[in-house]
Length: 373
Image (tube, rainbow, N blue to C red; front, top):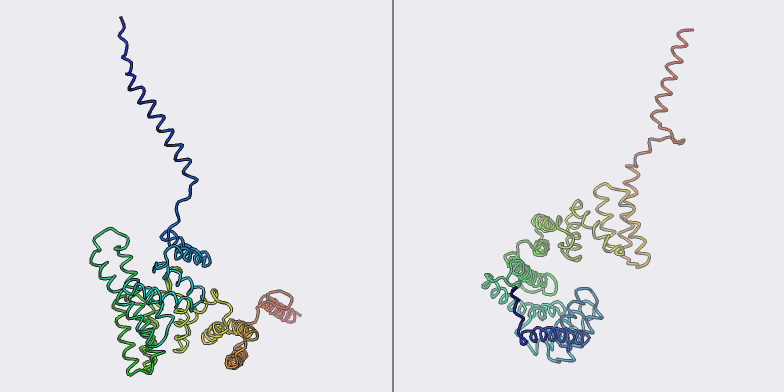
């Protein structure tokens, strides 16, 4: 007789049914839990605020970070991020207040708050904040560089280069103080150059370092070295992807220095690109008109100067109006001496050269006819 397969024991069948039951219960529980909100934490709100800040949603970022501080009143990370929101919103007073509180609570952590305070303050006070921030930043760079063998994002070559760029920019900020607020200090220009050299050592691809070096050379009347240095600064970013180029003020300062050095050929493309980002800047249009004028592009110069004049009507500046009027006269005189090429087409739209050829042929025919007669 045919042998039958043994039936599973009752215990095994029960386990199978039990497994399905447990799975159904777990699934039902997960479904019921999906509608339950997770508890709000200060850490989660800080992360949310950072995302809003990246997206430029300043009000939303402010709200999230203020909620984080409501949950954890002494959270200095939330304070530092909220201060950044205030800075980007153009509100320096609350930014300073909250940064000072963060420094008081946690003075040896977070170099960014010292960099921001250096930016918001001036003179010796600003320099002191930058120096403290630089101490913390170089310590972090040293720590990260020594553990660069790990595969963490915070030890990657890209992150290390980012830190080196921030160190370089900090030296730039301190050097710039000796060209502005602290320019009357003894040997201010020498101190500025020393700080610029430190900046270049940390990041030789930083255009801002060479811009400040060029400005320092200008303060020392070393115009040839300034011209070579600013040209090198421009070469470091002129071919970069737009997302990687320096911020607007650095490019603007580069263009202005080139105008001062009468390098209109290099200044022109800088101000052309800047005009697409800020077309309400009368000085920008003046510099662009000046660049076109000195490169013999007179029609373009006249058009840009008109844009400048229109803006000065809305926002008048006496000294600027005088400069514009002077350049306007120069452009008109140049156009009078070098009028644009006349259209080769005649008044009736026919080709004038072709008409001249026909006239010559007619004269030749008349001469031959007279000889024949």
